[in-house]
Length: 189
Image (tube, rainbow, N blue to C red):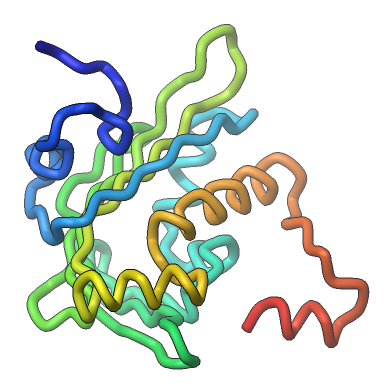
């Protein structure tokens, strides 16, 4: 029986395996995925996302992304308790205007892989951006629970980060609850 629901809400138990089938190099067993509609052309959204230097602008937990060449980059990401995790990621699939897929290389603190798909929304309403991520949380189930407590778990972050991407692309800025610079800096840490 076919299920046309997003993989993260599918009723079948093999959702992570089905997500991995769409990736050249699947890394990770925990599946996270979110979709947002953004009122911008998909080519513009793809081009902004493909420029890895832009990613820390809206990926809240990303401290830095350093391009190593046209397909590989070094990532430093916030982790629970004020620590960071690092990995080198390689683009495994790149279809301009449509898809960017990646996989972490061997030795990653958090083995991960995933893809971001850009599809035209119906009725000329912009673009659907879908992020699907497979990852292995450090510390297994307990590590995942701790990451959730500190709001550093990828499923929580995917929703927030896509919302931030939408705000940035539609308005040119990301809304914040901070009333002054000190609060803004505290909010970012």
